[in-house]
Length: 121
Image 1 (spheres, rainbow, N blue to C red):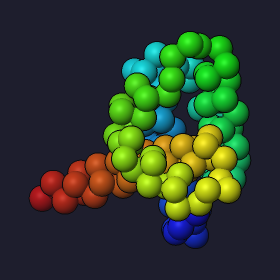
Image 2 (tube, one colour):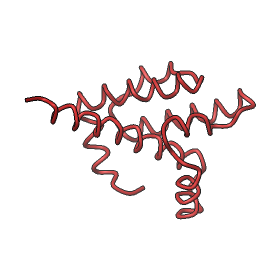
Image 3 (tube, one colour):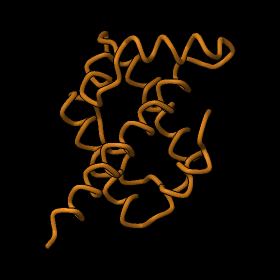
């Protein structure tokens, strides 16, 4: 898990965390997956990671579909997922997916906020 201190600091920012929650809920909802867990998230990386892992495992058990629609929606390619899985063969599949979801969702939020702040005169 690379760059965790940066992620932890960013998630503790109230503005970023709120935007992170909104984006995460939007991505799960548009992939037709439950979003009720998002409102209960706390701005703590480990807590978020654990809740996403539990949700992903629940989705896999309840539905016959896989997680690829969600990963495609979030913009996590199959190649990137394979790369991360190959880097640490001891890491659980759902742990890797949850980490990638957190990183990419946060990245989208930070980029969006950066460009918003640069648009102001």
